[in-house]
Every structure is written in structure tokens, then in C-alpha cells.
Length: 246
Image (cartoon, rainbow, N blue to C red; front, side, top):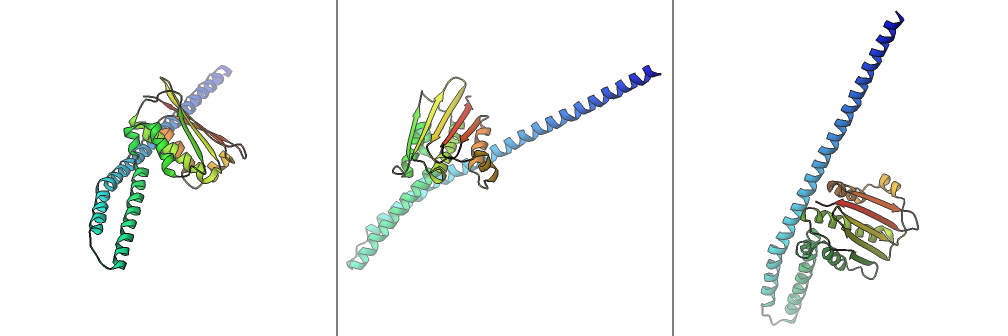
């Protein structure tokens, strides 16, 4: 009788263990599928966003730019005798020049042409020059070795660095920002450090309502890489980004 109870108990325990294992495995599979679907959705949204940026940048550069230049040329060719009319025409030409300059800056922010023409490092260097904050923040961009072009990932890397530079200017109170790249056959390593006031990383992630830090993690995750942010008040901020090649 005792043997029967023992075997029944053992059988029930084994059955319960199998059910629990199956239940846990189902949860893990569901979670992995959910994460996979989330990654695909976010990737699709960001890809669509980048394509739309490219379309708008192309329209600004190829359509509105030449059109505004033609308008300025036509205005400048108008002959008037009145001094006030000449002054109005001169001011109008100046305003058009300012519009063209602003439009080119917007077009560049949407899609840096240098990224396709000269590669990632030069695109980041050019971006820092376009900012016009050299007197406030010294940005050093360097590469330990040659960085292999990767069109599918380079735009994401550029956006990550772009976001970090904006965050540094806006929040860090830093005077120097170093951006270093290194690559081997397995991965691309990006090390970024500023000498700013630093911050509590976990608190910033928890309390932030914006997409600043979140966008860094999302784009890194899309490329199946990792990003580590280390900072503390008064100690500046370090960003460690690892991205698999291929």
C-alpha cells in the first residue's frame, strides 16, 4: 500500500514537473516571439522614417533649392529707379539667401550626403562642423583603423552619434567630447566620452519622458548590438557601443 502511494506521488510529482516545465517553456517562447515581433515592428518603422527623410531631403535639395535660386535671379534682374524699391529687392534677395541656407541645413540634417560619398567618419566630422558650436564644445572624431562601409548600419550609427552629440550640447555642460571608432573582423566598437557634469543613468532612464536614451537603445538593438552608458554626477559620461559586423 505504501509502495503504491509512493509511486502515485512520484508519478504526480513528475507530471506536475512536466507541466511546470512546459508552462515555463511556453512563456519563454512567447516572450522571445514577442521580442522578435517588436524588433521587426520597430525596425520597419525606423526604416520607413529614414526613407521618408531621404525623400524629403531630396525634394528640398533638387526641387525647392533650384526654384528659390531662380526666384532670386528673377528678382535681382528687375530694374527699378526708386531707391526704396531697390532696398526692398535687396532685402528680398537677402531673405531668399537665408531661406536657401536654412533649407540646405534642414536637408543635411535629414540625410547627410557625406555619409554616402565619404563614409561614416567624415559624415560625423562634417556634422559637428555644421552645428557651429566649436566655441562651446570641442569634438574630436577619430578612428583607430579603417572602418568598412556598411550602408544598412551606418545610417543608424550616424543617428546614434548625432543623438549623443545633441544630448551632450543640451544637458552635459561639457567642453570636450571624444568619439572613437575601432573595428576588427567581428565587431565595430564605438567609445564616446565627455567631460561634462554627468548624471544618474538609471534615474534618467526611469524618469525621462523623451526618446533620447531610448532611441540609442532601440537603434543599437536593431543592429543586434549593445550599448552601455556609465556616468555619475561630476564624472562625465562614457558610452560603450558594440555592433557585430556583417
